[in-house]
Every structure is written in C-alpha cells, then in structure tokens.
Length: 169
Image 1: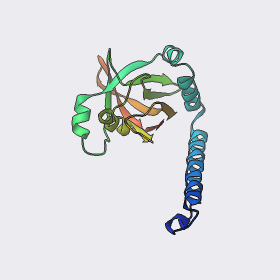
Image 2: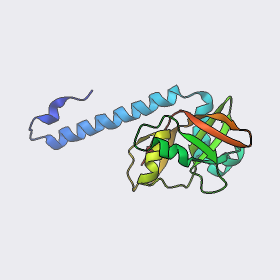
Image 3: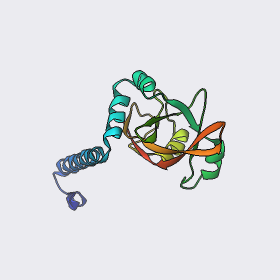
Image 4: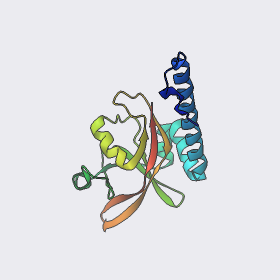
C-alpha cells in the first residue's frame, strides 16, 4: 500500500522515492498477474503463441489482416469509441483477426509501429499501458474480442465487442 510519506520533506527523500517506485512496480506486476489469471485458457494460448513466433502464429491461426474503417474513425473521433468497425484489407492493415475456440479475436499486426496518431485509434481497441511515441516493444496482455457483422454478405466486417490490453516498453 502506498503511504503519503513522500509528501513530507525528509533527508531520505530519494530512499522514500525508491520505496514508492518499488511499490508501484510491484503493484503493476500484481495487476498484470491478476489479469493473466483472468484470461481464459484460449486467450493464454493466444498470448503465448503471439509472443513466441509471430510467423508461425499467423499461419496457425489463419489470420486476416484488417483495419478500422474510415467511417468508424470519423464517427468516433474525439469521443469514446463505442462502435469500432473493422474491415479486411489486402495490405497495410494494423490488426490481425482470427477465430480461436468460439470467439473471434483481434491483436496488433506484428512489426507495425503505432505512432501517436494511430495510438488514438488503437486506444479504442486496446487498453494501453506506458505508451510513449518512442516505445521499443509491444507486449500483448489480452487480445480484443470482435463480433462479425452481417451487413453485406460479400464483405466481412467486425465490430469491437471487448477491449484487449497492451503494455508498451
């Protein structure tokens, strides 16, 4: 538990600062651990496979490349996105969509850099932790869940059903 000790001047302020930072790191780890234990077995397998070998992951899960639709972006810009719609794309998609078990999941496409503008859109889909524009790595904590939309039988589209979670480092 954090204590308000650092609010008071002290000759050991750097020691107190270290103690508070250690408690925050410990709290972050315990939060991550609790999230991981809340994941279904399928979600745990997805996260492990995604981090282990993304090329094999793409083949094994038969991913489809997708992007958020422009209409979805324009209708949600500046407000909390509730109706994020994704559509398949042949190139330059930011997300991978695939079926596993009885759900359809969405994860960030590997090797796609998320700049600060793209992060606004990504934050509608994933709860992001520690994002900075100069991050080096994305750690998938929880895949997002999407639901197929049946608007046009010739074009498959998906709507965000449940946010995923990412950690940037």
